Image (cartoon, rainbow, N blue to C red; front, side, top):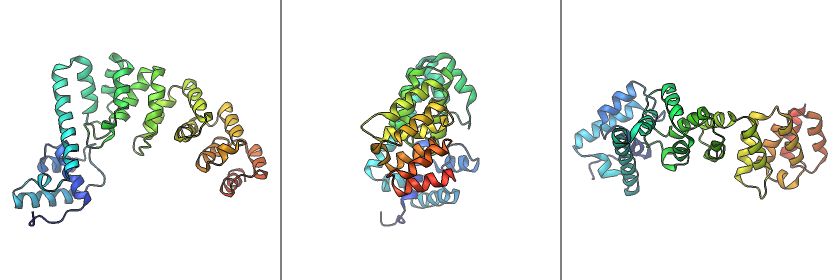
Length: 281
């Protein structure tokens, strides 16, 4: 152990990425990164992969076995087992399992054929299960953590309103990379999604659900009923004391400048008044 150079956190991430997605093989991982596959982590440099490969070859020992903390080894094993389970299901699980595997393991940036094929034969249930699985949000999982986003796309194609609540719950992950796609799937349900979001926005006691609903309603911010609700809530002290939520509400009501200006005479927090002044000038 004393002959192994000290590695930082990013090196351990590379080892786990290699173990889960590339069969513990640095050569396969390097080829994949040189081809810029969709599963490439933008924070991983090819030179860092090559450096670890050289260290491992010089020591003739598996760096993961020596250096990964036990809880990360368990995490890696879970993901490798999941890959094996997917391969078994592909062979023995029937047409639906095959199409799910095709979607999850696609190397296409936009796997349109796989999405369309699955939407034609599946109901919401397996996609909702996938969307709700914490495991598949992990970038070490099959599909590089893209599975929830891909499931959202299929759910939008299927068009069953039963998907609205699961899509909303998924938005609470606040995953920067895939939030837009999940939001697009949610708003594809039109008035049904808007009605659901307005109901959540108004509910008490306040929680992260209100913030998430306000954020999602930005895609309906030109619609009269959304603007009216935002203005009503901006007159409710319980809502205006929650500065981030009130800020979302101000954005939703941005078209009604004169009505927003009237709020400048209320006891809103200074930062909210400043935001209204900026929007209405």
